Image 1 (spheres, rainbow, N blue to C red):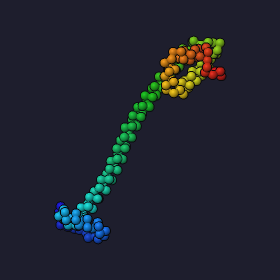
Image 2: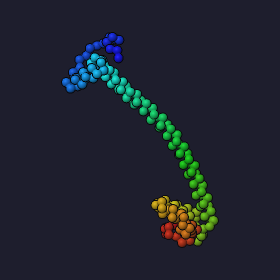
Image 3: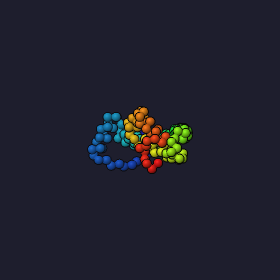
Image 4: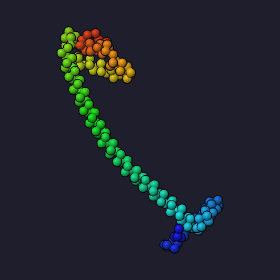
Length: 163
């Protein structure tokens, strides 16, 4: 390392150090065969470059966050689109199922499509409130599934007397 004083004009400053730190600095300079001034300048340069590096990291981190936000935004838009398509298909299935049920209903029990649709929604809400394991059992149980269908047809019902 060339002494900085030979390369460019310098300005002298005075720095006071604790005796222990001064002795450590003196030993370090001797071990490197450099003057204490050269060692102090090197430490200052290194410290300033670390500070600059930290500022660069902050800048780069901001850019990375922006890129991630853009990428996630695109994915979330895609997922929202897929969910919308799923909702459309679900609604289509729902309405076609209700249409089929209207052909199978007991006209002595139901008088309007609205009554069937209300009962179907109530069954769906009860199903959604179930624990996953109970919902699987219900779905896989032919008897329970048949009972729900029978209640929609107008047979025995345990869904609620207000329908």
